[in-house]
Image (cartoon, rainbow over all chains, first blue to last red; front, side):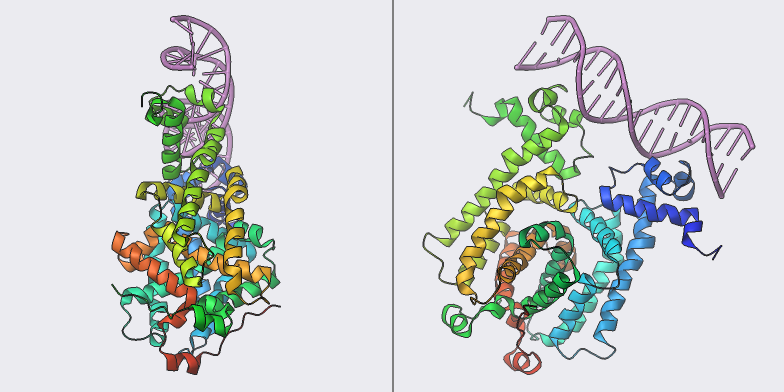
Length: 229
Length: 229
DNA sequence: GTCTATAGCAGGATAGAC
DNA sequence: GTCTATCCTGCTATAGAC
């Protein structure tokens, strides 16, 4: 415990505090003075361990963000079980669960999404890192899992777009929590998150169709076939 | 022309350049020196016209962002026509069109989404402003338009969640363009945007169901009814 | 109304003692 | 390895000339 505890290793403390601060305030708004003070280290330590501020930021992604994303993916796979999934519902629900509930604490999830949200708005080197190590491989994986449930004539692009539609919702309900809370007048408590998982699963599988009485559905809504152009 | 042209009025030039810079680099990364130089004004002009940097930022939202959002909403309403919509497809397609194609130039759209994406990641006073003047009212409006197509037993929350699901996708494909481009290996040209509108419409109406052969759909997929908990 | 010059402060990085 | 003191740069905001 004396040697292994993360809190005893200055470098680890710096990474933890840096992540907390970067996620809360963004790269530019955080100062190295702030980080080293929070980590109870001296001002020079950041330069000593990481060379400079920017590299500390990248290291946060390499040593904190990426491993945590991997934990979410593992949760998803565990949720899904070992054998090949036998229905779309399973896959989509596991996905929504892994992201909305998942293995992360509320605090971890907040950090995680804040960091990547900022990268989406204003990509830096960290975005490349994440694309290559996490997003890309995971989308490939999902593509493989969901492909069997889609007609073979769909193009690769259409398969990917379907996956991204699901992703879009899962991500939105995760990191636009401020907006969602305001519009639904709901806190993100356990009950609400559970309702969200259900809703996202339902919507992913049948879209607004889930909410339509059969007669209206057949009456007013011609079946929409995705164009291939 | 001499008096009315926007480029002749220093205040307007400042707003334009400030918006461009804030959207590109984020509030903290931009300096007032940079803005005043870009707008061909002197350093003191920003304090003269807007008091301080923060208020200039807010004014960008008030005088540029909000009116532009209104133009998108007008486009949506025009696309929809005057009378009450007769199908969900109409509404959803108009919505996707308004956002993905819409009345904005590529440059305007880029600015628009960058600015709000940053606010989502790290809300400031500008976010409150946007929620109150734009997002809130527009979601109410959509709620009214889509309500007739959903079963009456749905709660207000479920209606709103459906709307947010659609929103989520539309927004994601707008401001995660970097990520989408990378994953689909596609530039956001006119053809790709047209395919996106089709795809989003299809997905919103029928979810992954659009992509499933009927026998699989009925076989492996029990109808998912949204829980009300 | 417009501009220049500058006050006053905070940031990242580093040199060099221990 | 750790820390303090400090350098240099660049920021916002303002005072005061024109």
